[in-house]
Image (cartoon, rainbow, N blue to C red; front, top):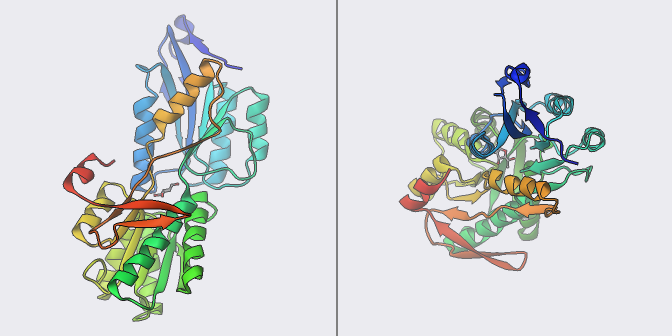
Length: 337
Ligand code: GYE
C-alpha cells in the first residue's frame, strides 16, 4: 500500500512538489499532502503550525501544504493534485462535511491512505482515520454551563443570539445542534442564528446587524469561535452594549486559543469551550502505525477543557458525564496555543 518517494540522483535535485517546494536529493522522506481549510482564525493558524512542526524533513517527512482559502472546489482540486503527485499520505481537514465520496474513491484507487483531521466527512468512510473533536459535545457543554450559570445568577429568561461558523462545516453543525438541544430542553429563545464564517470581520458584521435588529432584547451571545467573539465584542462596544461577567450580555465562545483565554481571564468572555487544534502528533502516530503495517484507530478524540472566568459553576454534567469547569490562570494562558 505504501509508496515511498526515494529521492536520489542529480536529476531529482530540483524536483518541485506542488510547484512550491523544492525537495533535496538523496533523502528518503515520507511525502504528506495536507489540504488545509484556510487561514480564517487563530485556531486555524495553530492547526497549520502543528502540522508544520511535526511533518519536517528532520522528522522524515516532506509536507506539501495547500491553504484552500475556505473554497471547497480548491480543496477537491488540491486532493486530486496530491494523487497526481503520488504522495504517500493525504491529510484533509474538510471545509464541508459532504461531497467527498468520489474523490476519496480516487484516493483509494490510487492506494493513498487518507487521514481526516478536525472536521468530519459525513458521506464517505473511505479514509483510514479521523483525529478531531466532538463538536456536538462542545455545544451541549456550552448549553449546560449557561443553564447552571443563569440559575446561579438568578437570571430567569434567556434570549439568545448565535453567530454560527462556516455553513456546512461539521464544527458549525455540531455546535449548533448541541446548543440548540439544550435551548429546547430548557425552553430558551434563540432570537437569531446567522453565519459569521469563523472570522473576526464576519462576527463583527453579524453582531452589528443584531445590535440594530434586537436592540434591548438579548442577554446571551454565543459565538462559535473566538475570532467571531472578538468581532462581536467590538460591535457591542460600539453599540453601547455591555458584555462579560459585569455586563448585561453573557458572552460564550469556542476554541479557547490564547487570545480567547485572555478575554476570559479579563472577564469579557464568560466561558470558552476548547477545541484542541494540535492534532498533528496524533496524525503522525497514525502514519507510523500504517508504516509498521498496523491498523490505526478509526476515530481519535482530542483532549479538551471548558474555561471560565470564575468558579460560579464548578462543574457541569453532559450526557451523564460530570465535566469540570477550569478557571483561567496566567499559567493556562501561557501554555495555550
Ligand atoms: O473552531 C474555527 C476554525 O474546524 C474546529 O474552524 C474548526 C473551526 C474552529 O476556523 O476557529
